[in-house]
Length: 122
Image (cartoon, rainbow, N blue to C red; front, top):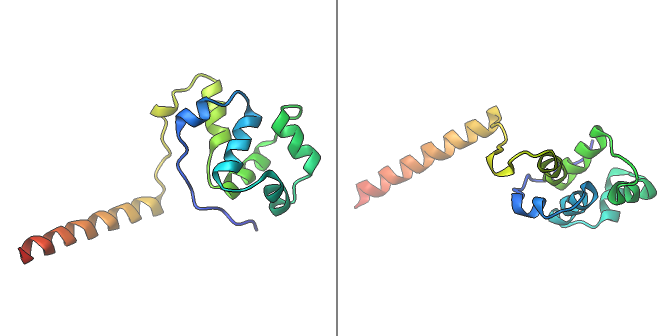
């Protein structure tokens, strides 16, 4: 099982500047702080095939693309594909998972309690 990086936010403007899926794949790797050869090694990807993905000489299948994005912790290639198809990236948002919702609610409750405690001290 491969490690999934901590998710990071990708700026739509960064993605929209890229001219190809390969360039978005490079951005994905770069934002994670990796070099292509590190991702290739970590995920046991063929170096020549990865190079063809980057250059656009070969398509990348969804399971492999998802593996790379999970490893790098961002969705730059996916966002680029949506932009290339005419979607407004600034209007898109990820659906909040149950765990993310619970975490958000707990943070909100904590913040409300901290505010209440601070107001009682004053």
